[in-house]
Length: 362
Image 1 (cartoon, rainbow, N blue to C red):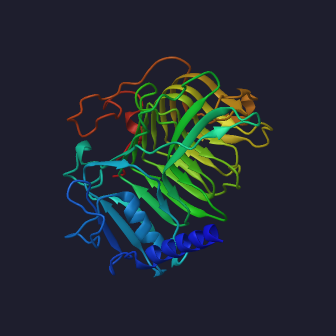
Image 2: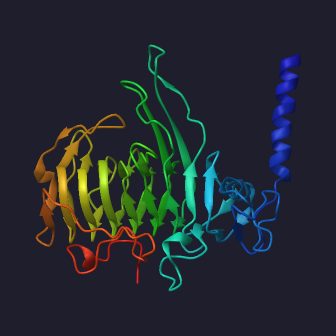
């Protein structure tokens, strides 16, 4: 009886905390500043929050409808817990969206790469075990989006400083952006820099998406294991375009659940392991349009998963248009000067520079 009373009080306390948590400011704008913010502030421009996870809690606790925009100032944001956006009592629409963005975006003439807010996960990993009770690995989520009509824009997104393979058969993995829920639609991830190092800061998978209407555009994936995985629910009306993918050591795009209207165009790829991962049954075919792919180990595989990249698939399942440059060997020229506005982009005047792939949309 005492245990039940304690549990009841714990649940009641949690409900009171949620009820007392401030919602978003009346204008729908939430400001976050990792250096100057305090998580008990009201979240307006003069009184910013400190953490993205607190901003997510404010959104989740809000009731109403309309656009909500979260602005992140330049700085480093250590995610000690998942930033979980699950606004069940707030109505978003295609026009009135939930947006998580940098204060200054790449198309601003005063922008430079150091203006990008840096997100890096520092949280514990869940423990995964097999049917024998043996630990096989762990995982965590950086940003978890459980709503439709969402944009994530202008962020520098890291993985987590962890030893990804601590023992044989064990895999520890961080998922920076996860879109997960029932009947979700319309997620856009744009102008973001996903960056990782497989030995120091593994970025296991940039975007794990379960929904329809996914658009990934004008992003740079540098040193990321896998870029985009569409899984579970049918992903119709989705696309991946104007992205630059460099030094991927996994699979770049996984169309496990994507319908055959998925579009892949104006992307530039350099030094990849596997370009494309199909579901194990190879039911659908896809088209690569107006892209440049230089240096890869395998063009298209099937099956696979967190621990591997399946096996060679029927190459006919990937239709390569005549406007695609496809070379099995070689590397593209990348700007490595950190002061340059086009840091980690294709060197002007060289192969791939004229497709518009990268952070800039203008």
